[in-house]
Length: 316
Ligand SMILES: [Zn+2]
Image (tube, rainbow, N blue to C red; front, side):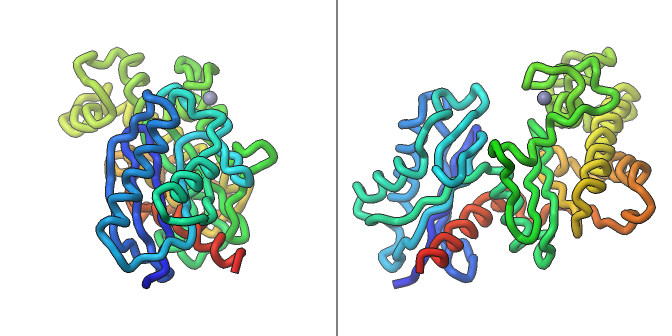
């Protein structure tokens, strides 16, 4: 028998599950759409189905613990969801750790500890332990995609805060975003301009072509010489860079890792982002490395697995 942990990444559109061994190698993984609109029991059922699929493909794995990275604000000690976006119907209040543990007993896995954390925190833990920031004990991992969030790691531990929301940098007030409303309902926050959604809304506010549907479309137009698209791309990217410079002065991390779909646009986004970051940064921080994430979409699974293995070690 091989000792493994079961890792989950529960995102707004898809849920991934993986078996991860003690050497932190993903032995097998499966993915399914997340039935987020159908309520928490449908999401839990999808997680259990994925676990059954993985276990059906191996006879030699013994599950020691479970790690879950999920969208939403998470009470980690209790393993419950505190709040989530509207796409996850009924997810707030769900006792994910207890429900997953109960279901795994029901399908014959037995009683195992279940660790639940926010997906951006899981991503940060993954990059800090096995990715772009490995070997660094103080790191900020920023995910820029449809939203903007961060995981903050100090002395190797994810900082959760007094109300479980540490790292929600999307709500930093930022210059140049006063005309855009954040998903939290307030104008002028980083996410309102720096996210992919924010870039698109900024482009439209500048008089951009309504036929352009998203950030990817803006990048294509900008590459073709569209000045409005180029300006929206530059200003959106720069807002992230300036915010990161401010965060750097608060925590003086060993490095900052930037990941997510918008960061994945490439140099057209990275160059104005890093230029704004360097311009804003005070001189003593001038050498602070800004790195691209290395684990891509698997970062959350690695981080969820790392937390599960920590739980195994704590209980042995
Ligand atoms: Zn906000």
